[in-house]
Image (cartoon, rainbow, N blue to C red; front, side):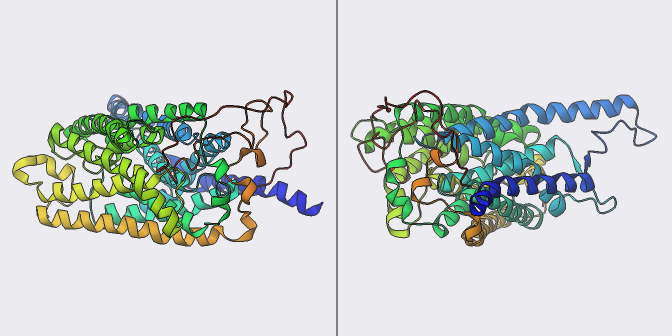
Length: 485
């Protein structure tokens, strides 16, 4: 009886302890931006009118794009992961939980590491702080995609807690020591999040994942729900890549992302049909169509012309589809890297493409081409193009290296038995941790797209049976529910 009670209390206790700790730390350290969040005139030459104008400019510059990125985190990422036929609640629900926690935790960690005011011992927040917290949440949600359904909610919270620290240290190195550029965060968010998550997935790997294959698939309606996430991400991605860009660089980031996404979407349909005997694979349509947004990220505010953005999108879409078709099954079979959502194909490899593209673009970024706009991209204006290219290469290497090292350490922490890693019957199965409606939840006899992401080489992915049990009464199956978290 005591053991059962302790199991029930594990998740609420961990979450409430973390949230109370965040509350206390916010009380000690976090304050509104002194210039934009407090009603004060800060110098004799500044009037109330000019202060108001400064605040209005800040809001108009960031708020619309902040809201777009905010929507991407909760609707885009949340619904994109609902393809698993028995893990829809876990996908969108735990995405909601983790993202909400990270928005708070990353504010603190980023403040301590990169933005701490040593004079006042405070962290000052504004809309730029908030949009940067959204980017941090994106990195963790990408990692979540790699371990989706294979870790408990408690393990997921612990992973988020550790990952944000590594993420913020990596950003400090990339932006403040290497002075590299990554406007759309393809290196520090997408590549980092993907390879952090893949390393965690490898460390916590158990054969139970392979034996739970019947849960790792979709049904017709779960793939439709996942497409909601795809469409939201596809529509709002220009705001993600342009959110922190400035002046003419912001316009280029929007335009480049717009055309790169269109190209990756078109090419994805073509290659999906090519590798699956004339039929479209919904795995590719949900994910590879977005690869252009990732691959253009680091390049977003460079002068590459719209045709260059289209070329990047074509390459990204092609690599992503081929990755799902051929590479993911090999990683799973030979390296035991089980990638539930295929984050390597959507975020990892396109993030590398973006990093390598930025190395080339930085080597061609001359003062004659950019004029006075060059310091808006590179904070170290005295470097030559070849030096900038070298620092971009270093930033890419550091981001991937930090992700792999941080993921390995975090994975080892998650193996501590107290965090209660799911067993075979709990993997990718909402029935163990959620109150489930009696009608509509796939039974053991329902078949779907087996190995939906991890073994997408199967050609039997174009239809799914939707035969739910007819012998279950209305209500909830789990009224005598025991929360095994």
